Image (tube, rainbow, N blue to C red; front, side, top):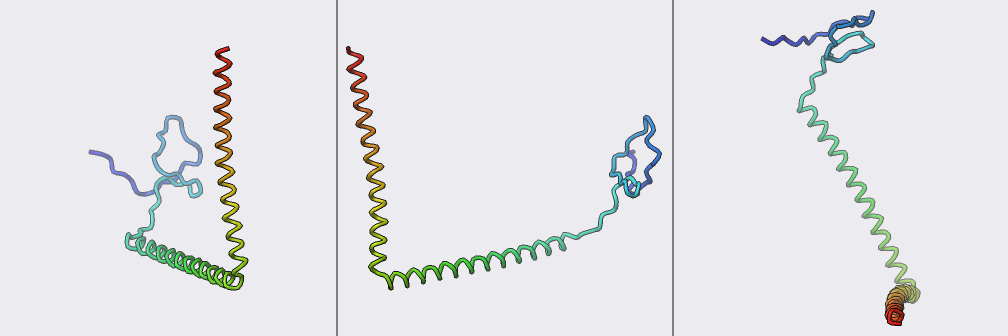
Length: 134
């Protein structure tokens, strides 16, 4: 028949361990000089679930307030942009045209650079072939 596990705590020998003495398999508390697992307060699952629900509710409220502030800021930016476009229609058209032109110029430059590299590569290959025949 197996031994019973003791749930009580025993005092720790402060004089030191003796050679060959078995080491207790438990928690050793140096402050109180006791060996054993102290009794844990009993927490019910219901209490823990209630605490988690409260934390989730608090997080949901924080997310909602953050979303409302972002939505309000985006709406305000949109209203300001619309007002600026209405007040400065000609400047807006020029600005959009300049941005589109810059994008088109960058795209054309990138494609022409690629085309020049392929032509240069073809000439290099032709030169290598001619050199190999000579």
